[in-house]
Image: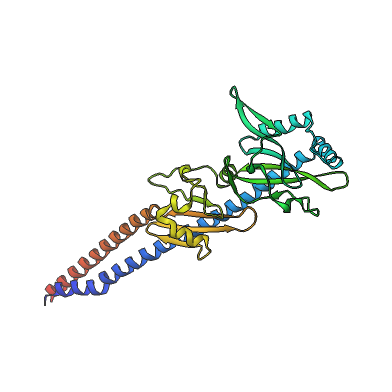
Length: 331
């Protein structure tokens, strides 16, 4: 066999073949690293959204506590203790409640005053009149949706504002914030119920919806109620429906994550992570990332590395062959 053929075979077996194996191994390890880093980032983002929900709820608690400490509501609570029937709502208090609701109409869909049995007494809802936002007041014609069943909110030992789970009615998904109203003897006589729009709460927690571009991926958040209703998604059209209807191709992944069978999955180019929020308000926060866009740069870099390595091998092989040819001629 000629010396050139022998050298080619030696270079292929000793250098080129192992080089291809190492390149394939490096690419697989690097891709796994991208998935791992993205998965951790998604998990951190899900916990961050949950923490932001907690902070937002606390801010609403503080705001409502400040409202309930106004003299008008304190006077109403004392009057409710002194009378067995329904106490008229003072006009000045109506103005204060209307001003509060009007200034926060994007966040709150209604203010309701209820008695200890949860029956509605008064209700204010935001609306428009001649293009101006105002609060509409009513003390009659209530519906079953206005009845509040939350005995925990009337526990005598607590002054905390009670936070309900996400509920659904004709006004949309919402969270009820219930603040007990007490008389001078600290007895609960009634309560103020504030209906917080779930979409506003979750949009504030998840941040603005950032559209994806061809060269940058944006992790998508999907937030589900305990019943599996999509409360928040990057595509608002998917909200208000069950997750298996909004995401039929991912229903099995969502089901596993909701049931706590695993916190991380990947399928095709998608990486998933989840966080189950156990304290009020209970939510399933699912994060979805597309690692294929992050892997495009990896593919480019790996092929450049392979090309440069091949050039070095070819140069080394030619140099060795030339040296052997010169040596054989000189002898």
